[in-house]
Length: 187
Image 1 (tube, rainbow, N blue to C red):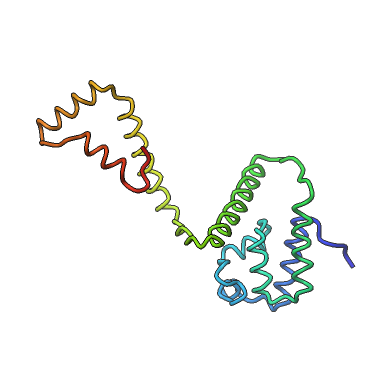
Image 2 (image 1 turned 180 degrees about the vertical axis):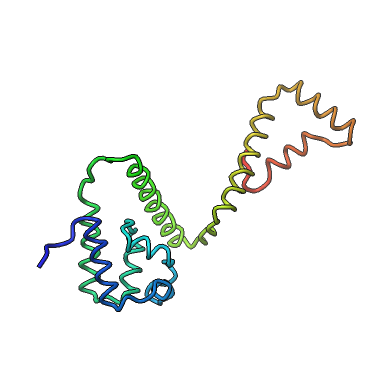
């Protein structure tokens, strides 16, 4: 009988074994199961079963989706904590550094979501890749505009305001103040 699980590959093998012992149900059924509780997607389960390091919440949800016994769940969670407690060797290839950083970032995200739920704050909706790119581009545009306006001297700002007022009757000073007062914009 093998000893306790103490590596990520051992945890992955154990999860694959549990998946097989439950009859290898389709991943979409596992993701939709009451045990998963909407915390796992089909791709997340696939990634975990193929060696991606799960977060504690993902592991707990996957074990619940498998319908494991309290003893098995306790043993797998103990293995998870044992693996985290061990010092990881230094990265041996560049992708390892990125994978570890991503894993740490995801763990921080899970902690932040737990804090938000505890405080009764609604979680921010997750954006897909395209929407994130749009949001980042818009945010960058506003930051550049702010930096440009902040770099103007009082004389340059007055000259621009005079030109705008002469051309269209606009008051740039009040428009800039309006923009700075928008939610999500910083002064």
